[in-house]
Length: 116
Length: 112
Image (cartoon, one colour):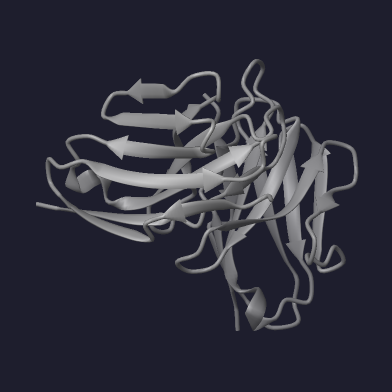
């Protein structure tokens, strides 16, 4: 149990376009989902926390108008990178928590975004 | 105060040896300390976790040692294997459904 999926696993987009990344909890209802980005050989940096049905809470320095997060249901959260630029190229990882009796965060496999 | 400091940055261990990774924190509100293993191009996966009411937790070849007074914790991998070669992250959170603060990571290479 406790499987989190992400789609797509890799995406290449042109500068100025938007791209949407989906995060799904496959076998549990996620009270909270988190979005991270990870640059090569670096740690995971939290971008935002989202709870189903409410606005996401963004970390300091993360542009909420650029990184749109929607948590429409207990099993799905989406991250949309708007007007993407090459510096947005990164590995984006989501995690989900909320399994009954278990506060652990379960991570998705990540999405590699390349902006050309 | 939200930082979690991790060392070493990289580690090379011979097969069968013990790998030791250390972490330190400052925020005394942290009460949950997981360790994650990450392979290249993959998301992190929970390896083992500890709460501060115990000083040690062992699961198979993996052991966490926790020193609450020193605000330090460490991961020991016994009988290290080449398949253990990965990046390891310590982390801390205030528990519940709260966000996790990650350490800087340790790239472990286990050589035959």
